[in-house]
Length: 329
Image (cartoon, rainbow, N blue to C red):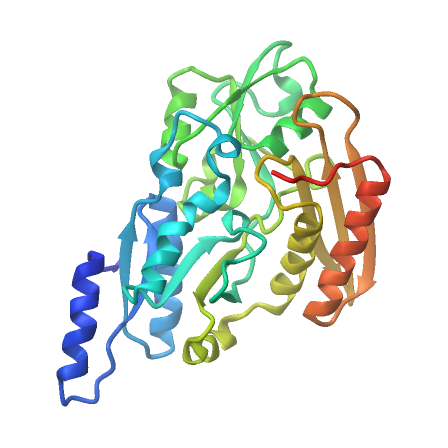
């Protein structure tokens, strides 16, 4: 990775210096990113795409509350928005121009003044089964311990194997793999995309097809956030938008938004195109372990954002009709 990383004060000072120079050379675009290995890979990927288009780009590494609080589940400490708040502050204060996120970590409704300007082509959206001793979920013995940080995965795993012990697993990707290798878990479930992006695809023993474990809304996709007043950046990023991924994830995120969009709600939503038709599936479960899994499907000829969001809202209605509860958390 050929990234350069500086502090917020350094970047602000750099911008001020550039303003005083007579040279017409523009200041570099600054990307705010979390400092985990995966987040830095994602930011460097966007950096490379922008540099291919002739832009100068720097990375601004930051630690977020989501990275710092590791002893409690995300649903109990504020949700996945904890991974993006500090990056948004950097955008607001002018320390950075854009922020790169795993789209599944981005809240369904951004704060006023911010915009999701670009969604890149999706990596593998599926969940991965990772284990030292077992090749697949079906091979685990009764009562085996499986680690995951996701309430969505908890309810889907319970539906597949109610005999398993499912334990919380927090930390960055390397930390989770280390805990597995230390023998604390018989298996863990991770996003396939992150493992593949870091060259760790060999750790995947098997993948869960969407028919058995629906991914989270936005899983496998990268989103780029900017201040909504930065039309120059929105125009710069427009050619990098992957239309099929943008529409599919918009439909998924519309399901989540219509259901309350809370990290404390075990909800899955996944869409993919079959020709011009967008096929969307969703699943909801009770975090307390009671009741059956509620599933819903929908499809439509989707060509724009409004159509994608409408499809997502229709599927959310089907979920609620099936017994899924709207989240107020």
